Image (cartoon, rainbow, N blue to C red; front, side, top):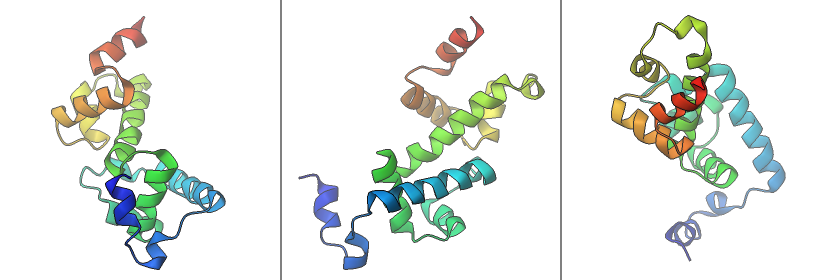
Length: 136
């Protein structure tokens, strides 16, 4: 049994309640709508607690929605939105005079290393490999 499951079993009753599929889907839709409308991921210092506050959800519940609903952790969840926003901006003529790194900073990454690592993890390509395939 994974450590997370063992720990989850020892939380208070409220926190260890399983999310029904219906509630999980509803909360996922709420989180996705908020992410797309408000783009909180552009804040490089965004935390789980801050996002939970914006969504008016307890942090443990938001964490559970992300972990169970997307099968990823909070940082990968946020970085997925950042990468998608980065790709959108790369295709927008308004951003063509920007460097890749400046766009990466604008979408919420705080270092070139973090951007490159996340991009590779999420897309299975380095940024340069990705842009070679896009330009073809």
